[in-house]
Length: 362
Image (cartoon, rainbow, N blue to C red; front, side, top):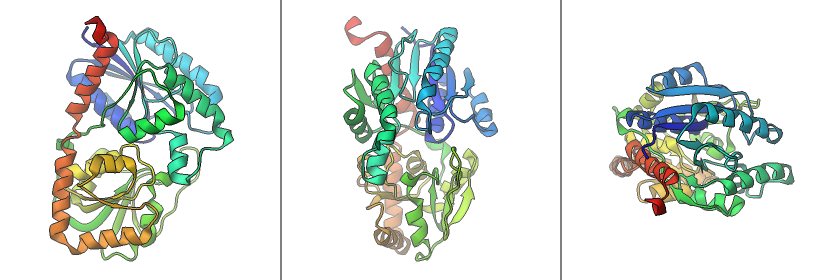
């Protein structure tokens, strides 16, 4: 059976939006209509404009909190009813959920759940301890949704292993790497500065450690991304040049100009920004965590996330050694070409086909 329609849940807060739009664009090029159902804060105008440029994409927003937000669990039943109503109206061939709590529902089509990140693994990596008892309702919500889903996918083996350990067992699972189009991130004339990017309010990105050592470096450090937490509050950093939230074109230019991309992450289930930077010809300095090692081993410099001295030493070493910096940038670019959008889309199409028509029925 050829897949003609897909329902895709998403949020507009971080990398899930980028991933969802990349996937939807690739599916549209295969003639597949996609309904993107956005939970949480509404997409910004520029996000809506980007979605409108994708042929055959329909965008809907449901005003329900994301699962990890404060007091979100009681509202997930209503969110599930909204999603089910959309699915009955849209009549997709496959339901692709980029959140967890509704994988067990009686969908009108085969469903899968993609594990992008979770509170449990975030606490273990960022705080060094399990999530507290106040997260028990969240844990039960995720376990029910994930265990009830026909298929669970993660972008790295490290994330799949963590999710399985915390919320499993799963009925079926696999790893499908995220992907980006190389043509969207051309390299430019490199300038003597360091770039970092991400949700700056998220401790997982560990921009604070980079900011603390920025004054010790001979090159300036530029940082792009939101400082405002979606539930309130604002992150503050000194010693770096804050660029704010950049639109995709401006972000691509920032990557093109940067010589080094630094992401000393404590927790990063995949790291789209590192992939984008590598495509644009940046040398990578990354947090030494399992997921980033899995993707970039041999093509990046790794540092313990909270070791500021090691981070400063690694960055100074690349600043002072241009041939090594260029070689690392070349390796990163070569590795990044293996995480391309077309490969991601093909793997998902294969998985969708298996869900609709299992191998034993072929």
